[in-house]
Image (cartoon, rainbow, N blue to C red; front, side, top):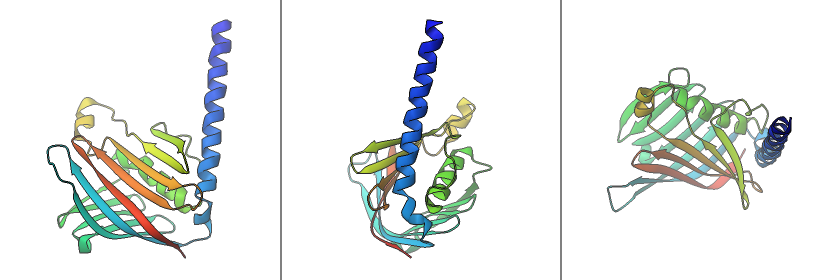
Length: 194
């Protein structure tokens, strides 16, 4: 009986934390409800563990309702595009396409961006690979995709995605995509909500 009570207490505490974090996230992205297009300047940092110097390039972020996100860097040589469930990544002019239906590591990524664009409408609690934390004035969303096999795990391009949102201004401050031997990080400034 004592173990059952402890288990229930832990479950209630975890539920309380999740509800509180989701309330913070909803509040942080509320500004997106009234906006149809969000733009910002983008800076891309590519870090490889084996290389001493990071590569830094600049471009633009554009987010449009209902589910379009585009980060275009260096005049289009590098791009990260989401159009609904379809994803396109352009690296050095070479295009790679996938979808959240074919590539499960992008399913939660898509759901999070759609949640943001809807201004916090919806339910992210069903995504077990998602964690929401508060860090100072920021809400940090970490997506750690899970693979159903070791082979699938080896084929995953990214080990995690980390989004940072300013809880006071609703601005998406950063998107970091962690890889096996480095990361790609986009930072955003000068947001315009239209």
